[in-house]
Image 1 (tube, helix red, strand yellow):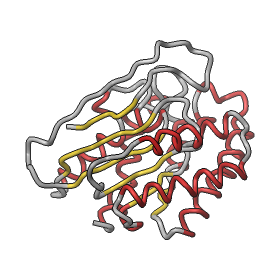
Image 2 (spheres, one colour):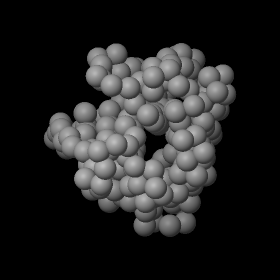
Image 3 (cartoon, helix red, strand yellow):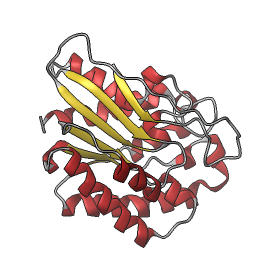
Image 4 (tube, one colour):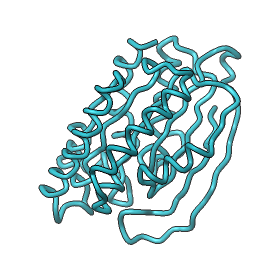
Length: 231
């Protein structure tokens, strides 16, 4: 079970209007009363825009951990479609959990790239988000991991500027990788996986911009063995 701290179905980087929806759900895994507390920070990719709740990558990730004999009692998600690093920082500053987390993930930046926001400011914001993530993990940098920004140029709605989008995403991801290295935080590159959608339309969700459950599972498969090494 999981708690979605804040979510939204407000579509951000294409002109599709949907009502904004806040969802709150909490509970513990029925398998065990003792296990990891996991927090996922991010944007539309983290809440799984256009996929069922059960197919969000953080939910799939927690499920995979359990299947690999690592109990997870709580999966909390702090994310919203359309969020930039600044938006996520504002939410993070306002979120004060009563307990530390055993594991924290961060996936953010696509909206900074889409809105052509300053990459220098992105670096500043992202570094602060790393520090906040470590704080959520009780000061343990080795309990934080970061996923790279997927390349939305691989989707139908990104087809008009794929090369330009890809180059821009790579620049933002270089910042992500560099900042993770500074703080000795695990960086997991899922961008090449996201580009596989160019040749497999089933990896793209029905909105033609975000990714399907199939892609979310591939991200989990890439991250799981690396994160297991941290635990």
